[in-house]
Length: 148
Image (cartoon, rainbow, N blue to C red; front, side, top):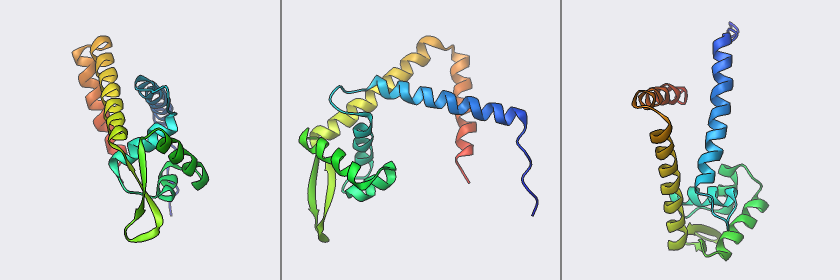
């Protein structure tokens, strides 16, 4: 087998810059919809539940990359705030399924709207039309990297 060739200097530089910018941009976008009463971890769980309702704490822990005990604490805090419900699994009464309450769903939607408005506003205020088209083209290139 041939070892893979070393990345070119431009590939290494592009990798560094993309990771740094995406990391800063992600933090800034999350702050745009930051709620004072929940943590970023809790907000992440709410977003996951909006996409996959009726999952267990173990499943959430796995996708969030945290221990089951940590996720149990996170879910308990969200339940105390009235943002999630825990109900017995109809197929296995020993398991609890977690889903958003209507208030939890509202919070997720508000957060998504706030993040979208922040980023669209920044792109409008700080970029020219040509620069926005360049961003769109760059996103297509980056999207290709996500496909195997």
